[in-house]
Length: 255
Image (cartoon, rainbow, N blue to C red; front, side, top):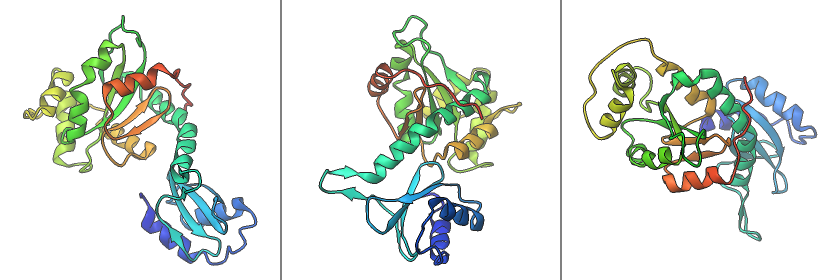
């Protein structure tokens, strides 16, 4: 979990908030001492005497009310066979989705590496945003299926996320792909294992990397539907189309 080491230190040092009479007070105390951790909420969990901490957008951890014990993992309700941690993440992502879409809208359509959907497709005008890395096998598997998405009318907006970080070979490849004569063809070529011809130009690739932090992406592919729903990892084109068919696009919340 992202920020977990810092969160552990945070929890272990906060032995003063035993009663946690006011969740807002606990949140303010946590945020004051560790401003680099984006704590969303501190609230009672379903487990008596344990608080639920939501941080970094949609990350969840649990801490005992005396601040001594930290639980890193899923909290399950065995009577209902419910993953309560996952339920919290779904709840938070429903709130965060429109904000993510707002950040994408702010970046602007011209700053995505886009594969346009067919205008006569049943889902014409619909979009998905995909954080991708040319060295990611599951990203490449998804890319092999985007023809199905395009035929259905779905536009695929790629965000180039070099998992190796800024300045890495992959990051430089992403810049070269963007700056090539035909970025779509070069991306497809690179995903098929082809070499990338070095090129440079003004590009939004560093802004793409900034969105990785904004959305809290830790792996690729990460897919954000225009409904605001988030899919971590590979999902087939058929599944993505089905998800778009049952929900309307969300209204972006501009930052």
